[in-house]
Image 1 (cartoon, rainbow, N blue to C red):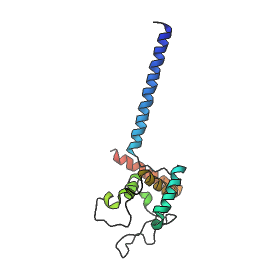
Image 2: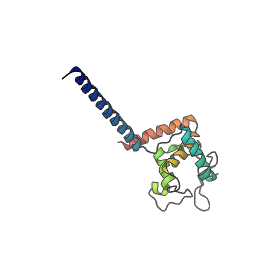
Image 3: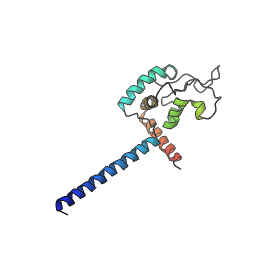
Image 4: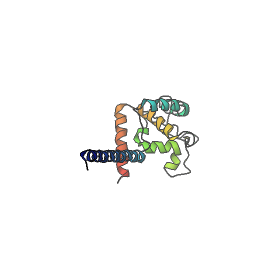
Amino acid sequence: MTLKSLALGVAGLLIALLVAGAGYFSLRATDRQAAAPHRLRPGDPQVLHVGARIYAQQCAACHGAKGEGQPDWRDRGPDGLLPAPPHDASGHTWHHPDEQLFAITKQGLARLINQPDYRTAMPAYDGVLSDDEIVAVLSWIKAQWPPEVRQRHDEINVQYRKSLSQ
C-alpha cells in the first residue's frame, strides 16, 4: 500500500464521518422542530408580514385592529357567548403556551377542552387557514406585546414543554 492510497483512504473515511455527523445533527434538528411544530416566530419579519395581513382579514373585526378585544369580554352577552377577548397585554392570550393558542385557533376551544357542547363565537380555522398561516397570525399577535410580556410568554412555553417531557 502506498502513502498516496493510504492518504486517500483516510480522507475518504473523514468525509464519510463528516457526512454522517451532518446527517445526524440535521435529523436531531428536525426532531426538535417536529416536537414543537407550532412555535411562534415574532422575530421573523416575513412571518409577521403574512400574520398582519391575515389578522386584519380574519381577526380584527372581533378582536380589534390593535388586539384590544370587545368591551366586557369577561361577561357573557345576551346570547350566552363571551365577547372576543383582547390579544394585547391586557388580555389572557399570553397566558397560554404556543401549542394551546394554535389548537384553539385551528380546532376551536370546545375541542381543546373536550367539551363538544361548549358554545363560542370563535370559529375554528381548520380548513380556512393553513398551519403556517395560523402560526403567522399568532406570531404577529405576540410581536405586539411589550417585551416583558413576551418574555413571560417565553417562560410559559418553557414550563409547558418541560411538563410534556416528564
